[in-house]
Length: 127
Image (cartoon, rainbow, N blue to C red; front, top):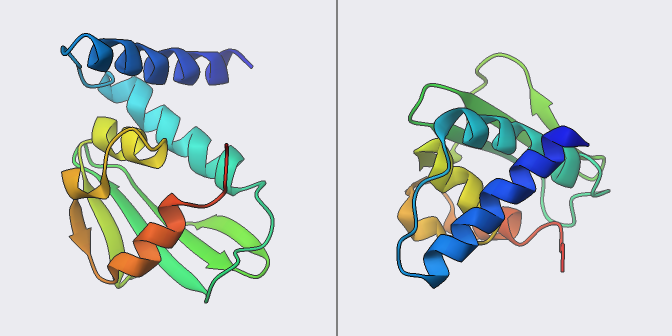
C-alpha cells in the first residue's frame, strides 16, 4: 500500500505543478518503480486484452525495460529481452506520466504500430 501511495503522490504532484505552469519530472527511482507497479497492478489485473495479441516494449532512458505480452489471457511481463516490433522509448518520468494519461505518447519516441500503442494507453479503462 505504501508503494502505491508514493506513486499516487508523485503523479498528483505533477498534476499540481502542471496546474501552476511549473511541472517537474517524477524522480527517476520513483518513476521506474511506478512503471513496474502500473504494469504489474493496473495491466496485470485488468483481465483479457481486448485486441489482437501484441508484444510491446517500454524502454526507459535510465536503462530499464519491460516487455508486455498482451493476449486473451491478459498482460504479463516477459523476462529477458525478447524482440518487439512496437515500443515506447523515453525518460522513465515521461513513460510513467504517459501510462497515467498525463502526457501524450508524442512526448516519447514511438516504435512500430501507433494503433497498438494507443490501445495499450487506453487500456484498462481506469476512469
